[in-house]
Length: 126
Image (cartoon, rainbow, N blue to C red; front, side, top):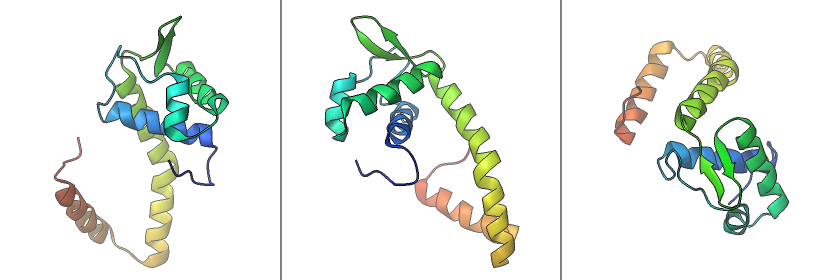
């Protein structure tokens, strides 16, 4: 996995696992890869992966069954979406609005470009 320099690696790993949960790779009460398996897969130190899993466990996204590993919590998808929507509205949307003003981009232009992207992806927002 290629990591960016703008976030700690353990956060990027946690975000990746959340992306996989959202994509349906791991369902509620299904086991996720062990810390060691995920560390090997991503070519990172096991301690970094432990920190990621600990963060996700503290957020209620995954839980540990002693001796069996980590599993996806009930309602994890809903929790991830809620958190990410709040983050988007608080952090990304204001920056988008600022850039629109600076670049003189109209709301209609954004709507048209966004609809075009959604059509390419063959999805509709829910």
